[in-house]
Length: 428
Ligand SMILES: CC(=O)SCCNC(=O)CCNC(=O)[C@H](O)C(C)(C)COP(=O)(O)OP(=O)(O)OC[C@H]1O[C@@H](n2cnc3c(N)ncnc32)[C@H](O)[C@@H]1OP(=O)(O)O
Image (cartoon, rainbow, N blue to C red):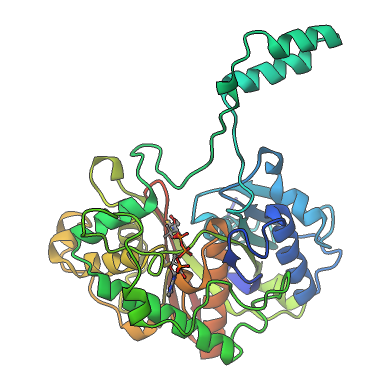
């Protein structure tokens, strides 16, 4: 038995405009947003009634009723109902991981084509009640007679059982939010407020320009009256950003992360179509770029490593397999969870000490050309519906490479739980 790996092409992606929570998509939810982006891909690439090998979708914040989100959404998308779906989650890396899942299946010949995507809502979050109340409700449900139900409902009932528990952005092992962790990283790597604000400002300006020049015309499908991302502020200035108060370290006087240089709580969805060369050719579809390789790493943030530093580990490991250096890229798409996360990552790669002692490299991994970083803006200006960000980035980078004609792009996404998901796209 022989396995011949085949190349995996990115055909193209779409997303709905991302927006602030409790605004345009407040009553849509993961299902509605996922159906919208899958339907848009079906429309764009003529996939009505087509059976794909797999649809991998995910959401980080989802209701228990959405356990089969991918399959349920594809059944309303126009794809053939015989298309299977898998629902996944790896925090902010979810839909890049889904692209990797689909790519691996295509590469090994298990499937010919598939869709990777994700959605998230911070408007309609699952609210959980106490275990005591849940047990009581299940017992009421099991009770056979109305009298037995009533007695089970009221026996020993205490009002405290009604106290709801809301999902948060705190790490279960540290109790600290992502922002608290990133603030700690910023202090450790001496990342100043001004450089964070500068990165945020540039993200807004670059995204604004990309909309003006039509880059997103086929990538962003209007939804619920929105044509552009709700977070976009092309008119923001360093002065406005400097006036914002620290959002996490509020009292020490040393806090540098603000609402302006952190991603906002977002709603949105994105999806991307991947396929083998033969499948694409058969359907007359062009390949924008090849998904060449991927790597996932984790850091020990419980015992002192920076929570969002895992991409610093994953990228050198991935590049070493191909004899590539950090400088061998035309585009760098580094997810802007916080401006400080991007800046800590870049600083770590420049640090001889970190590269030797943590990454095991003989020399610093080095610097990148800032003009090649997030050239059309990133999550600070676009927004960050956790599970949608990876597919957004794959679609953006594939189109950038198609427009350039040839070249190589690096994707780096940090996630909750101290993980990093990274990948290489290439066009030649
Ligand atoms: C792996 C990962 O990706 S980790 C990342 C995961 N994501 C997170 O953890 C989410 C982090 N973000 C948050 O928790 C929240 O968005 C916060 C705490 C940072 C900010 O929350 P809020 O205070 O509700 O933000 P809000 O949108 O109201 O903005 C606060 C103020 O800043 C202003 N502001 C925000 N961005 C800008 C900007 N770019 N330019 C100018 N002003 C701005 C707003 O207008 C607002 O001003 P106002 O109070 O006068 O109305």
